Image (cartoon, rainbow, N blue to C red; front, side):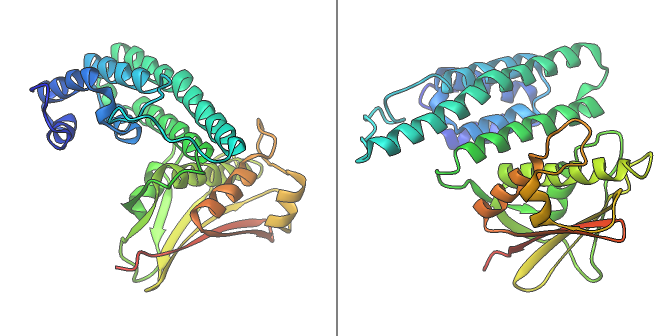
Length: 295
């Protein structure tokens, strides 16, 4: 691959089925680290199974996380009119960069260690768990940088639900409403994934209070204009509403302090989603509603 190779030719080889093609693309990116977005880079890391290629991609990520005073084209970044806005944005970016710097390489180390110790690591549940961990890191970074433009892309609703189920020991019970076929929605996948993983985990933990195994049901559907997702589970109680839980920071989780629902509420507001939560007769129901793409 030449020094001046266009990125449009690099990205496809980075996801090629051929390890040698991916290795060449990763080596090229080590020399041109700013020619790929962090989102694309993390996506490549999540699926990469060859240790040396992952090492090179982690080098690229480390370079991307170093502070820089210039844009990709070498031009100086324009100064904002408000110093307070600059300080706030810089703080957000620094915190996001810190999370990436500290956690993404650690995820890479887990991958490398597991790859050496687990036969067929790429097909293992451990690999699935590592991918879920990386997606949650991506979502946290996206939430911190919510003052920036959302990274909107089309994703299939069924795949989004399956990919963000947090429990690798169980399979999610997901089914469409009668007559509904899989559709694409437009969203920031990192933020929506963080929302879903928290909603699912809340449901799993709440169901453990009345059962030895999670009894979570996920159902989704759509109209011509909107789509909806409903998560139901048993819980140890009788009646409650979302506002009641948010106001006191209640949580049925065994190891957390009620931050999950507040995080979900913030993400929903950022993505323009409508959410509701109510518990009646020992069954909790969490609903998410969003608008479908217009085209």
